[in-house]
Image (cartoon, rainbow, N blue to C red; front, side, top):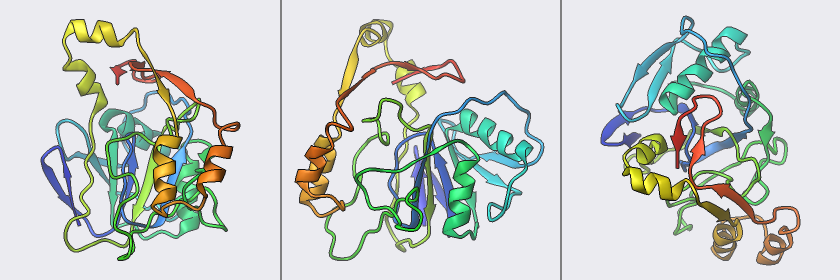
Length: 244
């Protein structure tokens, strides 16, 4: 499989991806969404971090994700995540249970209310692209689950069943998007908020057969998931940097 991250190609057979930005990959074990926590700054001693692109992305090696991780190693992964935004862990052979356990190192896991989850592990969402499905889940620029009052810290994906060609996923560094704006545009955007409405996406998903819920049930969930309002410009609680 080849991923193109801001023009940089990256090839890997099986890997775990821990992304601060939304992404969609063909998955067997699915996606874990992690709620936010706060960590102190740490130095990197127990893992190897190799950047794969200037705007974002790093490959993490010298680690086995199939078993428990020491606290020091988890802290270093978190530090690398804050620095590089997108982490790739190549050649990891882990079970769905270990995949969930890995996510729990970084906080409480979200359960997606609309997309298909494993019955035995509801925290793990399964995204599969079968031949009869003509459209992809999340085939557009997005950040995951922003319809929540407190969106997740990020998404962890295990790409396991991959096409020989294609399937490329693009990621964008939203720090740099904000920082590239003119001062006048920054000032205007910092005064704005945006309404996040899950029905815009998931009603279309229901109509295309990409969700386990009917259109009626999606609309009925409005009471549990009302419209939320987020600032257009956010300040990251750990790095202190502004982003869109």
